[in-house]
Image 1: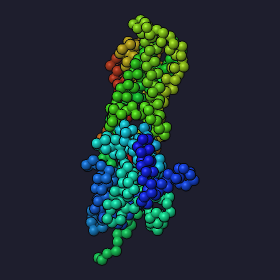
Image 2: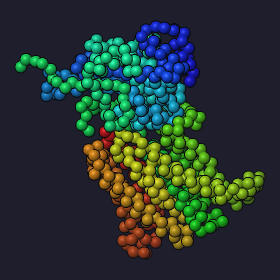
Image 3: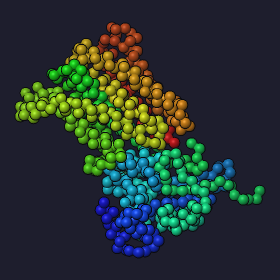
Image 4: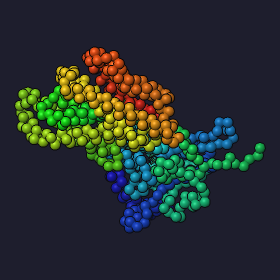
Length: 226
Length: 313
Ligand code: SF4
Ligand code: SF4
Ligand code: SF4
């Protein structure tokens, strides 16, 4: 709770700022006016653009102080070993589910949705390390941080970059624009504009968790000369 | 599953929940099962005195659940923070509901120990007489509540893992029922051993006869539930069929066939029915078949935890 209050006053203190902070402000107003919707932050990974450079992985670890050898996100190489010419990569990270099993099962509410942004995040102090959230997550993207011994997940850099009004570390680091971050409830957001014209998929929709991560799959192998 | 896009690796390289959880699930099952059976006998026969079976069940229930708590807390990555679970509750979490139930169940199991050793306590610690008198006034109510919570403890351990959607072997509605019935089976066995060994209960007393009689129907229901689990996976979708491989492939399939089926079911049946009454009535067979039941249920918990998490979707 206390960290949330700190953030709230911090945000109020800064006042207006970048587009991101603007939308947080929007979120705050929403809770006051209760008519407008809360923000719904989402991320888009475009498999056609990702080159597997793993800059996003490195940036994430640095921004969020993820211990060496551990990851909040990584990029899986899905290139067919028999056809190395056509590379294919896949982002593995928390899917930021709207109906999130991890927050549902956490007995201490350490794993919870941030009251302002709705982002699935952690209150490390309250985590007892029961690993219930880890086995409950259908996407297997939670882990125990070796330094804090508490569970952790990708939270769109909520208490690092986001707090400072910057884009998530991975998005900022991607030189190929394979990652887009934004608010789905903001009609003007870039992510909405892309989603309006491109087909994007959610992983394992059968689990009914409504992930906020969208993937543009690589369906064609590209135009090339034989 | 055939998805357009997916990844093949996850963050938990092997298993999220390991053997301490299996041990806890076994101990919670024994604790609840033992007290359920003993109280049923007590209610059914309208007993007023503290029988050997009652004494054994109170001790078994109380100490197994305490030991279970040690396993549970020991498995936390932040064991010193365990008290947080006592002050924060999340009612959508089966674990929170379980903790709340345990907070009532453990003191009640302790009260059962006081009831069971009322006479001894009055003699050795006379200053407790006042408290015992007060407790005795509520005995019927407290035993009723204890019975209810014993069932809840057995069942919640099943619900705890049946909500894990990633694992088809676990994510079935039969699991809580299977856990209650196997808890009864292990609890009865533990009860038999302790009553006989420490309270000199005669193997042919009427209470023991009841225990011996209920053992077999409990085992039959357990086998039936396991069979139903197997069939529901075998006839299910592709994901279920993946999980069904748990019964045939890898180390844990051996635990299933040798441990659960061989030691848990077949060995006691053989010992008790194949060699005639004479052998069946010996001390050795008595203890061995009770131990077999407990080992079988331990193997069941290990199988569920390990094979369940190995075959994920
Ligand atoms: S992907 Fe897993 S950790 Fe992330 S919100 Fe969904 S259930 Fe929780
Ligand atoms: S490991 Fe921590 S965050 Fe996860 S469910 Fe347990 S207490 Fe909650
Ligand atoms: S930084 Fe961008 S291009 Fe590089 S691996 Fe990450 S998503 Fe792919």
